[in-house]
Length: 109
Image (cartoon, rainbow, N blue to C red):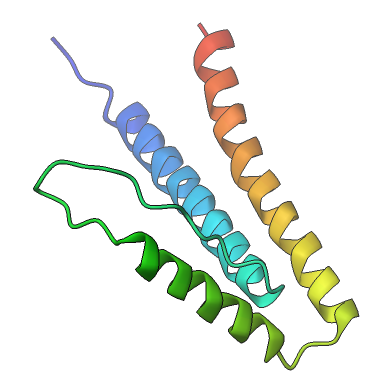
C-alpha cells in the first residue's frame, strides 16, 4: 500500500483555501449587511434545557435596539446601498464557492 503524499497535500491546501474563502466571504457579507442597517434578527426558537432561550420581551428589545442603531448610522443612503450590494455579492461568492465544490465532487469522478 502506497500513499500519494503530493495528492494528499493538494487536497489539504484546496480544502483550507476553500474553507477560508467561504468563511471570509460570509463574514464580510454579514458585516456589510449590518453596516447597511439590515441587521439580521432571528426569532427565538424553543430548545431543550441545554440552551437558554430569550423571551419575546428580550427579542423585541433586541429588535428595537437594532432599529435604533440603524437610525444612528453615519452612512449616507448611497453608502448603505453600496454596503447592501457588497453584502449580497459576498454571500454570492460564498454560495458560488460551495456550489463549485459540490460540482467538483459530483462531476469530477
